[in-house]
Amino acid sequence: MTGTATNPQPLPPRSQGEISALYEAHHGWLTHWLHRRLRCPQDAADLSHDTFLRLILGDQPLEALREPRAYLLVIASRLLINRHHRKQVEEEALRQVATLLETQDNRGPAEIAAARDLLVSVVKLLVDELPEKPRRAFLMARLEGLSYRQIGRRLSVSESSVKQYLARALAHCHARLYDSLDPLCRT
Image (cartoon, rainbow, N blue to C red; front, side, top):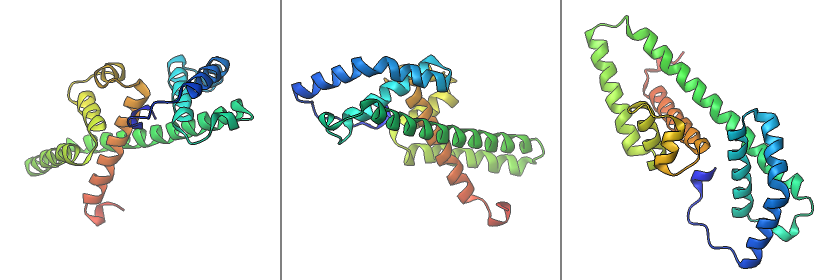
């Protein structure tokens, strides 16, 4: 995840050379491997860079890598799994929001006012409980209608990071809304 790294320490010159050599030797191969699985060159490029970022920020000494491609595949596979899980959470959250919106037409004035109060509470949760970048990404997407690319430019992060932020915000809102429902409504 590119958005989670915080102020990495500068690498010694030897390590930078090793990283450059590793990147040059394996980046194209890894990006091609990811592209075959994702069928999207932009997502493949993002995940390839995220894989190398994980390698750089990880604890594994580079000189200890006997099979760099196998190690890169493990990292990339884990990122693919995480990406798949985030997509599932985002899709489920969107389904839940769609379900809430479908039932909105049958509500009376008191229920509509309660729904507005709930919306205000959700926005307050975003402001109070979410980290800054997921909160800002969510608000830009939902209030301003910006695309992932536009949000990424504003936040100086990749589109895949924007997707992660939105999934995190939606999952958080969904969990909080579900917790606040009457126990009888959950069944």
